[in-house]
Amino acid sequence: MSELLLEQDKQPQFSGHETFPLRQLWLRKAYDAVAETQAPAQRSVFAGEDAIVRFGVGKNMAMAIRFWATACGVVDETKSGYVPTDLGHYLFSPDRGRDPYCELPATTWLMHWQVASTPEKTTTWWYLFNHVIQQVFDRDHLVRSLSGFITEYKLRISLATLKRDVECCIRSYVPRLGGDSPEEMSEPLLGELGLIQQNAKGTFEFRRGAKKSLPDGVFAYALLDYWSRMPHAGSVMDFDRVAHDFGSPGRVFKLDENSVADRLIALETLSNGSLQWVEQAGIRQVTRKGPALNSLHDYKLKMLEAAYA
Image (cartoon, rainbow, N blue to C red; front, side, top):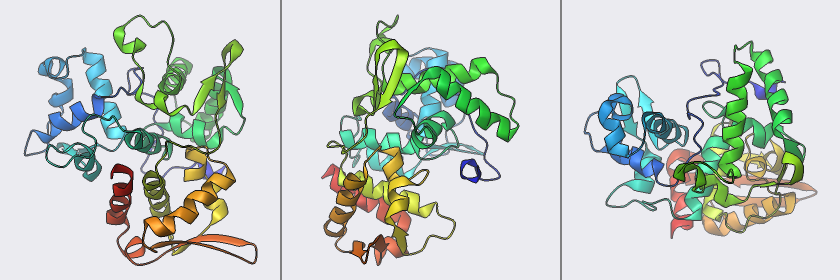
C-alpha cells in the first residue's frame, strides 16, 4: 500500500478541528488576525483569552479556525509563530484580495483541493476522496477503512477520535439537519460543492461527472500543484495520472474521464500554450513548457487569475 505513505517527517492527523466543519468567513478572520502583526503572530492569537473577543466565538471554535486556516494553506505555522501564505495574500489581502469574503465558487473548490489532495493535516478528507472507491458508502465503512490505515502506520488513535473525525468530514460536505446551534445550522463552506449527497438509511454517495461550477483556472492550479508533488516532475504527464492517480485533480474533484479530457484541452488556450494537450497513436498526455515548466509556484497563482477574472 505504498500509495498511502506520507513523507517521513509527516504524520496523519485525525483531530484539531474540534469537530467544527469549515465555515465561510473563518479563513478571512484567521488571515486578518495573523496579517495584522508585522512579525509572526504568536500562538496566543488563536489560543489567548482575547481570541474569544477577536473571533466572536468560543475557545474551541477559535482553535478550529486556526486548524482550518493552516489546513487550507491560508496561514502557515512556523517555529516562531503564524504567518500569512502567498495564497492567503492572494485571496484576502486588503488591497488586492480576489475573494475577501469567500463568496466565489472558485475559492470553495480551491479550499476543497487544499484539504483533500494531501494527507498531512486532514487525513480523513484525503482518504475519503482518494481511497474510498465505492460510489456509495457509510460512516462505519469509512471508519473501518481508516482503522486499517492507522494500523499500518502503527498509530495509537482511539476509535472515538476516529469516529468524530469521520463525522466532521462528512458534515463538511453534507450539513447535519436540525443542528442545535446557529453554527451547526449554517451551511459549511464545502457543502456548497455538492460533491456528496445523503441517501436513505444513513448512506452517502459521491456525485461524479462534470462540475460546472469548477473554474478551469482552479483545475489548472490543482494540476500544477499535483505536478509539483511528483518526486521527479518532468515536462510530460500521462492522462491516466491526471484522471485517476491518488491526489490527482480527477480523483479529488470526482471528475469522469471525458470531463478531465475537456479540461486539459481547454488549458492550452488558458495558458497561452504553456500547457498543451497531446493525443496521438492512442497516447494521451499533457505537457508543460515555458513558465509552467520553469516557475511552477508562481505560475500556479497566475493560472488562478482566470478563475477570478
